[in-house]
Image (cartoon, rainbow, N blue to C red):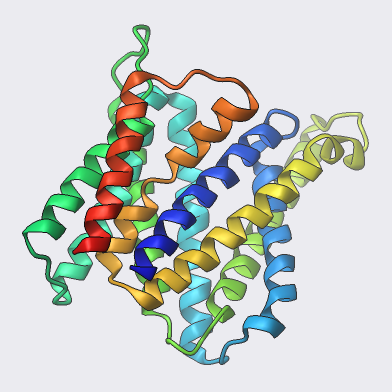
Amino acid sequence: MLAVALGLIGAFVFGAADFFGGLAAKRISALRVTALVATSGLIFLLVAFPFIGGVWSNSAVLLGMLSGLTGAAAIGLLYACLAIGPMSILSPITAVVSSVVPVCVGLARGEAFGALGWSAIVVALIAVVLVGFVPDSRAVRPSARALTMAVASGALIGVFLVLIDLTPDDSGLVPLLANRATNASLLFLTIGLIAVVRARRGTSTVASPGGRWRPGIRIAILAGLADATANALLLFALREGELSVVSVLTAMYPAGTIILAAVVLRERIAPTQWVGLALALTAAGMLAAG
């Protein structure tokens, strides 16, 4: 029951992080937003570490660093495929694949479900598709390239979940600290390399670096705090429950995004998304009962 609650809350907080990250990306580049999210998340985790703790070990640090690498690659592929579109098809595909990979790993490790558990997983996967799907009569079929990137992104997100689940039970926040440090380092290195290349080509902008970062920095920091909180909830959920169950619940993260978009931006929630939200809550209840 606790794992289900933590997983479901974590999914909604992940969705909130995506919402704030999306708002920040409208003001500054997505790459800078991602770097700020990773950095602010790292600072938040460093502040929380003395209170939560964790045992430092080679496996905790290594698995955390690997999860940071896979997470960075997953985000890069996700942004790339969504830029190609259509988002209404590619986003649900990514979410579903991100849950299927850990479910397969969990089953291979001996995790078992009864009839209610299997029914809940099926309902949850349907909910993920409906929540992330936004009907658009103008949407075109995704290209093979976009589909490949969406599946690869989802698979890497699934690998991230598996790696976090493999970390030692006594490691506390250590894996997440290693994850964020690796993520932030890679992103700022990438930003630096891009700046150098543009400078050599003479394509750098006239505006000062502070001016290019400042417009969305507060919102990006808020996204980083939400993302770090969601990752901590995910970690605790995996400590309490099964990888398969937690990964399916985590894949419901688009629900948090669309709810905040409806409340803050007054965006309309499509009827199919309302059905998806209802099914998500139903699936969570079934998993808790199972």
